[in-house]
Structure formats: C-alpha cells, structure tokens
Image (cartoon, rainbow, N blue to C red; front, side, top):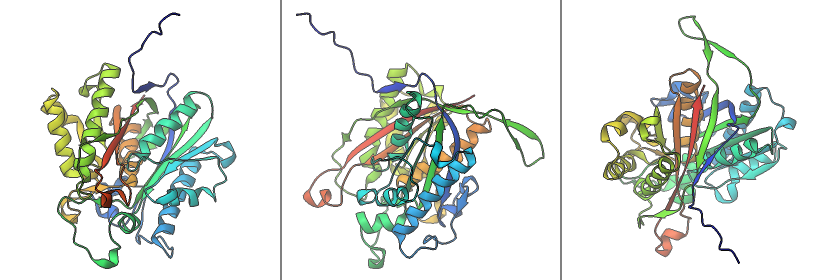
Length: 357
C-alpha cells in the first residue's frame, strides 16, 4: 500500500475566473449618516425605525432594501439570481430569514457574527467562479437597538457603557456577483468631466480559523477579535506570497480603536513595517463614526463592514482611487449564554481580495 502524499494546508482560495462585483448598495442609519462616511452611503435613514413598529422589522427592511436595490442597479430580475447569501446578528438569522421570505430567491443563511459579509462574499464567489450560478447577491445587516436587546441590555434600562464598548452600526450592505462583464460604464464627476469607471473583480479569499485569546469581557470585542484578524492576514500573505504593500488598502471589519491598535502592535511584532501599516491599514469600525459622536471605542456589527465595503470601498475602487484592496471582516463568536457560563470569546476573521481593472 502506497503512503498518501501529505500536502501542506492552504487557507486561501484563488478564483480562476475572478467574478465581477457588478453593483453594490450601502445603507446607514441616522447616526451613520452624521459620521465622516455619510456621503458614501446610498441611503441614510432619518429614523432608525424605518417606518416599522419594531427594531427587528426595521433591520429586515433595511436588508431587503439593499438586496432589492443591488439587483435593480445591475439590471437583474429575481429570476436571474441563482442564490442569495446573507446574515445578521439575531437569533435564527431573523433579519435575513424574514427578508428572504419576500424575495423568492434560493437562500443560504450565513452566520459568522460580524465576519458575515466577507464570509458571504467568499462563498458567493465560489458559486459564481465554479459556474454553479450566473448571478449571486450577498449582504449583511445589523441594528444598534436589536443587537443591544439581544446581547447586552434593552435600551430602556439605560445601562452605562464602558469606554472599551463599541457601537453596533445600524447599517446594511449588499453586492451582486456575476461572471458577465457589464461593458464600459461612465460617470460624470462634480466638474462635469466624463470618466470611465473601473471593473471590480474578486481575486481570492482566505478562510479564517477560530482564535481564542481568552478575553471574557463582552465589552472588549476589539481585543477578542484582533488576534483572529492578524492570523488571517498573516496566512493570506503567506499563501499568496505577498507583502502588505501589495494592497492600496487593508481594512479589518469592526475592531474599533482598541482592536485596531492591537492589530498594529501584533503585526509590527511579526515583522511588518509600522510605516507600511500606517499607510495601508485601517478598520471600518474606526472609520464609520467621528470622534465627537460618543461611540466610545468605535463601530461594530455585521452592517459596519458590509456598509463600508459596499459604499466607501467599492465606490473608490470603481473610480480608480483604489486598485487592490484586502477586506478582513472580524467576528466574535459568543452567544447570549456563553459569557454567563464563564466562557471566553472566540474570534474569527475571513479575508477577501478585490482588484479594480
């Protein structure tokens, strides 16, 4: 009997056909619309209830709006979409599941906590790249009020939040993936000049491992997730034989100010230049709100990275301001029960590499 040849594991999927990100849609709540990225959202709510009677219904409506609009922008009918992948933070993926019941599109519910956007983007790219589906829509959402009620305390209690706590973004983001080239697209800028828009393609995806740093405080999410982000980034660079300066931007999903600083320190300890990190690295949770908005340690939630990716990042890529971007959504895999049982908070991070051409 011949001995099986052992191959070293690789965490990175290289997409041979490189699916196109044909369209995107980014939606933010009232607070997000007052932040520094306000102009990059496609829609900002004036009321976080979105005209609904409950916060949960509002979040589901936000996600449905993003999914519907992303198809309209790509000129796709529902019958042309082979699969819809989305997730959120609520039990049984309530926002996504209730959104899906009205869409009548084959649905895969995704859960990676706040890493859900890149998880969905990666698996959606697998379906398109492998020829299993011509068009796939992916998305994620979160809502400050629904997340507080489920994971912390109802807002009516008026609980104090420590400085290390983060603010769950009321936001949603969606993208449509396809192997069909949409042809040349033009945009008229603010000066009246006509510019050709770039085409954005998904180049690779790195599957993250669950990393537990032993953090037990649910108000220290950035600290809990940062080691997972570092592990995924280092494995991505090793698998692809790249250095961080290959990218114009490397963005983690929702580590906030504390988590971003921890990632910077850990990567510097691993031998990556602090100067390069200062130039290319940032975190969506540190970008989405301004310092005067009293969000303590920054933003978090599925919708944080989803809305920043689908708005700020994608729009800068199609305009040619960013060419190569590595997106690393980060998730804290705790439940509503696990902290009370003395469990630590496992973290995970998935990475997606996109390129404009």
